[in-house]
Image (tube, rainbow, N blue to C red; front, side, top):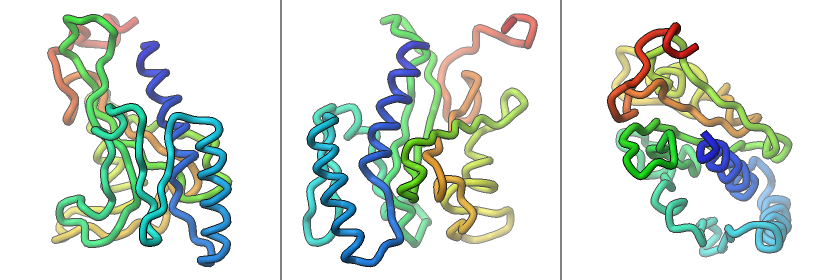
Length: 186
């Protein structure tokens, strides 16, 4: 569990570095320069400006492996911004095979870079991707539609959001569950 919290803190730091902002180009450039300076002085992550695009670079290779380019998501024809997704081990044990799938989107608002919302659909056992894709994510893929559309009411417009598939065995999470009901959990 300590690994999970460390990872969430890492994601919070990353989110403070990469926000999609709706500023004028001049204000955006000033903000990005100030943010890049802060990042360089306070974290292990840096942002490079190349042809007016922000290209994230990472000292931690694991963060680079988890990075999702918002322009390359299949069937999504618009940029949803940077995100990070992957599998998170549920313990530090070398024999651990159980992993939870997560997808993290940083806040698009300067004011929301300090806030983190963790979304887990109920059940238990209902995929959190249902919440991300049909309720509160940056794009919506509604039933019966051929492709997703931008969500103007996405929660990451105001805060950093982390969708977590849980418990083990739900959605893209992997491994054999060791708990089967609420009594075993308690």
